[in-house]
Image: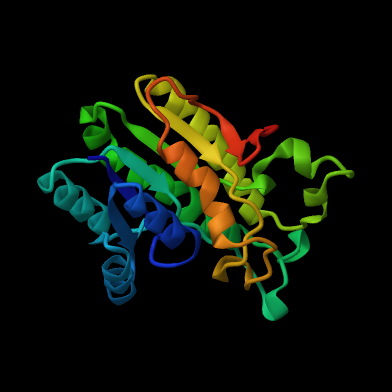
Length: 235
């Protein structure tokens, strides 16, 4: 039985990923910082709930102890993330963005991912087939955002794409450091979720496809890559 932890899994893409992996036979932990919503989601999905705020050391350490006591971990999906929006669901401009605002996004999207990954590494190293899936974004691609012909080029914000580019770099470095693991970054696509004020163009079912696919790769699968549902992406 494969045991999987998904951060930020009480709604949106994380919840749909949990649903799909439960259906595929995984023992899934729904990680959520809101206990009531997390427990409700886990109950509805047939999963297990673990209190986990990626910005809080204490909850992460407690989650490690809970999952270790239950038998360990095979797959970690770093899904929790935030994107800043201002009045009218607008994307903050570079001119209006302060260092503190960028730091707040990095606290969840980057430092939170490192905090959770670091904490669960001992459990993952005990697994026969450890996998880490880091939920990135198409906006992480320097090639895409610097190309005027690419659809992502329009995006003006600083904090979110910079944080996801950092996620990609961390993915590469973790993959090199732990060659026995399969560690990849994925781009789920522009999805209708609370993250973007439900302005996305695809469903959570479509978005979860690449996450589920990479969560289920075997020891001979790719590592250190950046993928969407159609294959590898340009960095």
